[in-house]
Length: 256
Ligand SMILES: [Zn+2]
Ligand SMILES: [Zn+2]
Ligand SMILES: [Zn+2]
Image (tube, protein in one colour):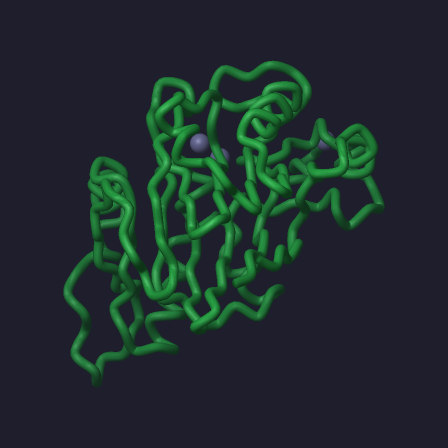
């Protein structure tokens, strides 16, 4: 199994349009961040996407992603879902309806906002010119191919959204706090990929200090932080972190 960080940025991406700050003008490629999402490749060839970020097309071309067997949505904030139209490329390549899993209320919101993506499959002669997705509400752990998938409810400000655990990897992209009950679902992780927005406080995301404390509490063998704003320089944060923790970046591949 391998996880690929498709995007490690927050909603604006880095560089931010029009910004001339040191990170936005940095020459370090690890400071160029597209919007947050994850690609997971299972041992049996499964190819899963967590979120359809605004930058999905660019990310797929960059990483050679040409098959998606299922999408797992965390929530419907624009940076996590607005690339959903690019799913039609995979429908066309695979000539299949693609399932989209998520919290029931999140899928309802997705179906409202992108109603044209959740219709009947077109007759074969018409081709797959729009995304054809099937909403599959998820509230309990289940087996998907060779993976055990566990939805992890996390508090993202006033919203309770999902992170996901796939076997011994967990991906929690937007969270301010994690309840005791959800922390119990995160025991024994090999890899934790966790929200780490910036150094200053934020009402709906973990700042660096909170992310480090949460990562220590969870105690994964390896923690990779993600969803950074332009206030965080890759090299600066990398120097500050302990051995088991590191900042993620676009294109980082994490073997499991
Ligand atoms: Zn900037
Ligand atoms: Zn969000
Ligand atoms: Zn986000």
